[in-house]
Image (cartoon, rainbow over all chains, first blue to last red; front, side, top):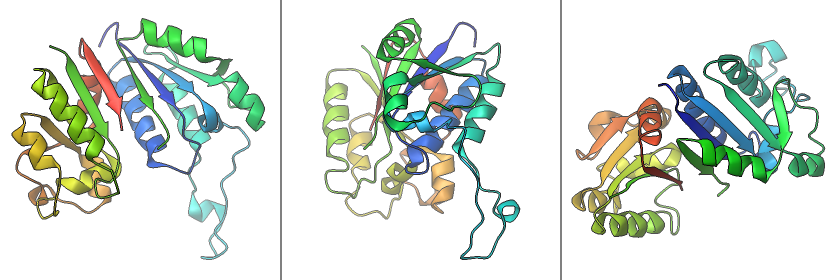
Amino acid sequence: MLNKTLTLALMDPPYESANSTTAFRIISSALRKGINVNVFAYEGAVHLPFKEQAPHPNPVKGTSVEQEDHPTTKAFVASLLQMGAGDPLLSWVNCGLCVDERGAANSIEGVKRGGPADFFRMAHESTNSLVIATK
Amino acid sequence: MTNYVFIESRDPFDPNGSRFIVEAVTGLKRLDNQVTVFLVQNGVLGARRNARHSHLPALTRAGVKVLADDFSLRERGIQSVELFPEVQQSSVDALVDLLVHNATKAVWH
């Protein structure tokens, strides 16, 4: 779909809500359709692409890191950024103040730092915007 | 007339889980808007026709289109034959198509 852009504002931190998974699915679907996507990650969502996330074993089940194959949200975001590396384009902006509050500056490559004004601009320039707020 | 897409993610059987959707959606429909409710995550739990006191029949009677995310249904072991006949099984791909349709307002709940 030419010249279409979807903007999403995300607020949930990783591993706490199915909202993150649904957001990833929406972003993936839009990119596969050739739709540009902007993401403005606010509050806890700035940790979604946090580089220091690590998969872990499960000592209760006695399984290793490899056996668990634990998915990290940073890996999902990296895959989406790879899908949206050109045309269509995925632009991911982390709220800078939210990042500083949470010590979440060490993001994976491709994540930009910005502020609510970026969300306003992205929403203004988009075909539509969706705010996925915390419950 | 405006197109509205409400994405309902909440369990309708939680306290006040469905009240907002029912009031907002039926109100917008009465004002002659085109309204679609897309059920996702625990929002699909009300789509089972054996669900007691589901709010969804009231929505479809009001002329609201109700769609249910196939992935969320599968995650919860709900098969299409278990759904209210007025509820259509759908997908995130269809949701994205709705979202980028012109003059559409999207509300996540």
